[in-house]
Each structure stands twice: as C-alpha cells, then as structure tokens.
Image (cartoon, rainbow over all chains, first blue to last red; front, side, top):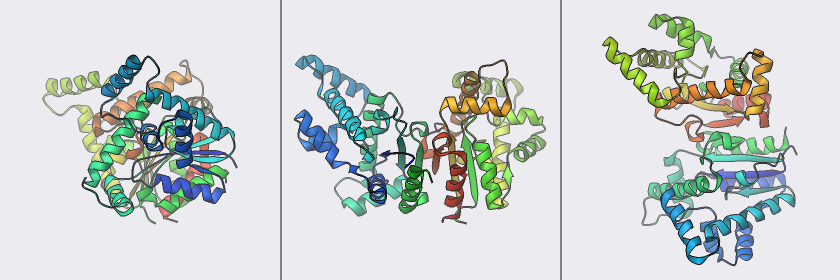
Length: 201
Length: 201
C-alpha cells in the first residue's frame, strides 16, 4: 500500500463513518472508532460516554467560553483541565494505534495528530445540509429537535473543538489530502476513490 | 456524463490548470482559460493582461483596503467601479459558456458563479507549499523573488478576491464537490479521479 493509515474527518450525517468502515473492510485493516473511545476511557478513568463526547465536541458554544472553562477548571483544581488531559491521552492513544500498523481512524482530530506521518492519508467527508438531514433521520430516527438544528449543533461543537486543539480551521481543504462531497459522488464512489488512493493504484 | 461542467479552483503552483486541461482532453470538451479572459476583455474594453489579473486577483493586500479602493473608485467616477464591472461581465461570460455545453473552466470564482447548476462539478486542487515552490520554478523559471513569496502573494490575492466577491472562504472543502492534494495523489491520479466522477462511473 502507498499509505498505511487513513484518518477520516467528517461533517455530522455525511456518511464519513460508514465510508471509513467500508474502506477498512476493503483493505482488511482495523477500523478504530469505539475501540479508541474505550481505550481513552480506560486510560483516563472517565466514563466511555463522557470520552465519546469530550474527545470530539466542545462542551460550550463559543470558543471564548470554552477557553474560559478550560482555564477555570485548571485553576480551580490545581491540575490539568479535563479537556486538556483527555486531549493528551487521546493523542497518545492515536499515535500508538498508528504505530501498531495499518488502520482507519475516524474523527478525534486524528488528521492533525498524525500530520507528520508520511504514511498517513487524510480524508474529509462533507455533504449539503439537506442530504445530511435526510440521512440522520433515516439512520438515527426523529427526535424532538429539528434535524437541521441537530446538524448545526454537532458541527459547531466539532469545529470549536478542532480549532481550539489544532489551531487550524476545521474543513479547510489544505488540512486533508482529499475532501469529498458524499452526496455529489455517492458513498460507494467515495469508498472506491479512497481505497484506490491508499493503494496508490 | 453525470456532470457537464467542471470548474477547477486551485492554489498557485498546484497543477490545477494542467489537471483541468487534461480532464478536458480526456472528455473531449472545451477548456476555457485564455479564451475566457479574451472574451471578458473584448466585452469590457479592458486590455487582456488587465483582465487576466483583475478577474482573479485582488489588487491590494487587505480586504479592507480592497473595499476602500472599490468604493473610492465608484465614488470618484460616478459609475460602477472597474472591479465590480469586470466581475459582472465575467459572471455573465462564464454562465453563457456553461449554457453552450460541456466544458472545463479554470479559476475566476466559476465554482461560485455556477453553484446553482446541478450539472456542474466543482474541484479544488491544492498541494503543500514546498511542492508548489518546486513546481513553479520548474515551470516558470527563477526570478528575483523567492518562490515561497511568489506563492504567498498569488494565493493571498486570490483569496481576498474570492472572499470579497463570493462571501465564502477560499479553500473551504464545503465550497467544492472534491478537493485534491496533487502532491499526495499525483497529477495523473487527480485527472483519473475527476474524469471518473464527471462520467459517474
């Protein structure tokens, strides 16, 4: 293979996780999503549900408030703030998984954490909002919140979290080796393109 | 074909123009680059070299100064500022070229101008700075300015021009259906991916 490691970043509801899983199956390599959360939970002692959320989403809506909360927490307890502690552990776990061999890692700023590995290929999956809204209702069902509002909240939290920890802008083409609109191309085509790029065919 | 129109936006030195030309050849459809400049020059009465520059690059370095210059010019002469006049003409020429049938259009915010056409596919080509610096020296030769400085100036002017006229951020994945790192993938592979996406194979 030309690349050993694939990181997938994605807009909520774009099918990025499904694309990552399919690429891993096609290449016969591990797919790290839930396992990664469990490892970080185990190493930090936090609950898995807390890590699933805190490792990828900002807990507040503005970067300013997020920074305040991080600073405040560190000051109050006299040790590293939970968000920073989780970030450090998660970064270490992601680097260690990549060291173990070829794999696919979804989300969690893995593109940034592994940016200096020459054998890592970084993909971003996005889609127009109406296509994503339709997809999340189909996959996760309806709830009391309007799908567009759910999308906006999830994306906004991912964006703030990413920008805070990486100093980069989430979704900028230049952060990734490939960015694909899964609605215009289709999920299967996205899988084909990424598999072929990984193999260097 | 699944898509009739391809727009290519690109970082300076990324090979975007070469990729666009190769896709047009493979699909047997017209490639608009110089012809587009000539049409806009003809319709506006400005010199071709002026249009080549003004239709894609901001003439000053900050958005604030650019806006001031546009406003000032409009006020001084009592008619639409040259930049706005060129933008309007260029938009009309691009829409008219797309109406005439399948084609490839490079640069000039064509992605934004044709964003409502369902048969248009929008690509962004980028590459790490060192790869682009090497490429521009190989293609255009050395000059008194350092290649990295040439890249930064060109990209900065394109970015300001794009952001001013479209209200979008130049290079954001979500503006395009596909964004490709021509260094990681290789120029030929970028051509293959885009041709295949256009055909809907």
